[in-house]
Length: 408
Image (cartoon, rainbow, N blue to C red; front, side, top):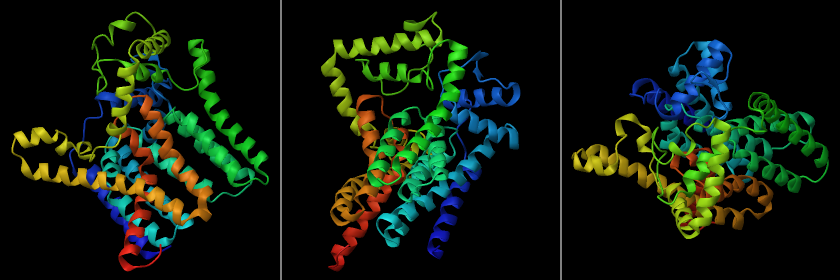
């Protein structure tokens, strides 16, 4: 392992620990964090998956169970959660490096590792009690295992386990993981049937544990959660809300008043389909805007002391913070633009590794398509940013080689 890589890992871990231990943090008892921590506390103390005293099916269980595991070891302590998330986020530096080394070379890997270590979104989200860091860690590990595939049952079990748990964290991954398994089939044709069946069955078994629980409690087959339904409604509502509505916001609240969570999900889903039918062109316009909203950010608002908007800091004449936020915005947008340019460079210059490139580009394309149709916010891009950084690093290496008059 290169000495540079260890130094980069230490830098990345140090920055994350400084963020979570020395900087002020957002209150974990607000917004989505409140529900994740509340459910985790109920699991830890009462052995019940519940929020507000009732069994819950709205929130995907993967992250609350992760929080509960931390609480059982360290007590109900969100600082411990943030420290562990810092470690998971820093470990992704290694994943990014080894993916790059496999597909490109170690120089591209070092560049990608360095960017990952200082990337503001990764650092900021370690301090938030939200599932983005854990999802990013697992998806990166999953891709690393795929491109270093060993066709044996142990590898199949590991991939299936990671895939299944990832789905329980972010239910949309239920569509991505089979796509990646199919790419494995394309990559390795020998012995692949046994491998694919073993991995897929393992993934389904992990998910089915929760699906069976949902059926027993709610009397309906719900693979992971009902959160998809109101997300779809919000994505199709013609007034185009850019943020999740506050509790009691209309017409969001009154639509399902008096309904239980399963009935509410059914209602939201049908209402969403009607929204599309009644306002197809407005929906298409909103879809186009989501391509921009998923990416255009500097993630500066993940840091408590920079939580306000650029306009607010300009009006308050807090120019230093304004400057830092603009630098972070420029940095992130540059990485994204380089990333998409790097995809073209990679396929042109590393065509012999095309099957591995497919595996790395698949999560990016999947999230772009997914959030074209449904609600998009910058935090949803965090799990796939390691792969954008990988291609951005390839683009940087390409530009360096052009400046030196060499081939990549």
